[in-house]
Length: 329
Length: 307
Image (cartoon, rainbow over all chains, first blue to last red; front, side):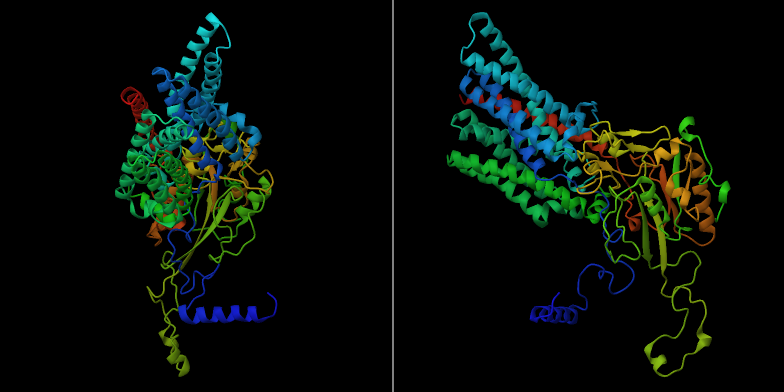
């Protein structure tokens, strides 16, 4: 630091603080007052490693969930002969699920050029391996499903070939719906089956939250794309209702220090804001028929709560007390 | 050379890899002198990049924690209890201000004061535990992490694509993704148990250099017997809180690099009951399938009743 009034002021500040508190916090001074460290564990070092994932992963959770459940809505639309809705839903599924999702996942890899190694093995005991296969299978159904549906809807080919396309579209869309439900829910298993206390303590809640938020997001996006139909409105009510119940579950099912990252810190606020946006607020807005606002509220909530859950993992993983406290459960 | 010297399993050539014998590390803090030779040897042999040069203020430990570029880590514990029968503190020396002021130091008061200001300094070299049931190995989606012939857990770095799932699956927080701009960044790294050395019949670098045989490398069954014997020996000589840290009762089902610890595992940053995260899979997948089915039913119901 250079000579000047600012430097002197800083020194004055330090002196004030030392005088008032008896200690000035900073690196290396936390053992002041005795040689025995007072922090939990080994000098407050984390016991488990917090996740290294960055912004791509919550965004992938958001788009993957939306894409997977969009394919489910497309299947429902096919069954009940609403081809227009099915087409839009399959576009959402293909763009978000087969386009954005893999790109986001590959971007987050430490060595993106080796992404195909994900398909080297099939391990049912690794949620990440299952996820890679689910996403691949989903993409392999959704993209040709969309193409077949579009070709059939536009009547490009005549007669028998068109009939074949119709059957193929139906089968592929049902296939993508089955893999879609798994795509939307496996992410909960992925972070639920880890060593991070705030995650594994809520391993039952997480797939419900991620899957239902995916369903609500898909319905919301389709509504915003112009499909204001009662069926999607019902799904909006259903998703917001379930999310409200999960908000209550989360505030009742507390585990003290073990999962305090969900209730405290910035990560706690992200969870709370996300859950309020896609739970009670979306429900109330929908109840008063402000459908577009309800849809936007739900989408925002789904995104914020996904960011929140990754943030919770980072906070909880870096907190040695949470691991010690989780041992009791 | 202290201990068994050149006769020690730390110095002999071996053929464990060819013979497919389970090997391990037994680390004993009661003879560790905190020299950090193991850290240096590990870095040099494995050409591990530096992990930052910072002063932690935590005793003599500026290493911090195991990670992508820290495969051996010597812990320095400062605890307020005596080490064995050792006498600590001011030994009854009249050290209060009044007596110094009066120049009346009564040296006859010097003697073994039993519980006076007890203090001990414990060193322990931490390392990847090479679990019997390894969380990282189960989690790895590329098959990059494998079990070797000698029972150790190895990350094959040419296969790893750096997905980061092993990082959150290790109950001990050992493996980590190496960030930019370090050499060979992007992949997951941890102790290799010097698999390359072992294949040539050599002992892992850290055990080879340990001057007090605080780190012992050898057959796992031999080491387990040795550990049990050492605990007994220490307890007889006054180390009442000596115990083995080898969580065989949990889902990890034991570790191949196990420790003798003085006091509670918590103080060493070791989880008392580590669990392999795969035990959480069942309830999570049940919940996922239930949600999947509920979503399909809700969608069909929506179209059926509200169209």
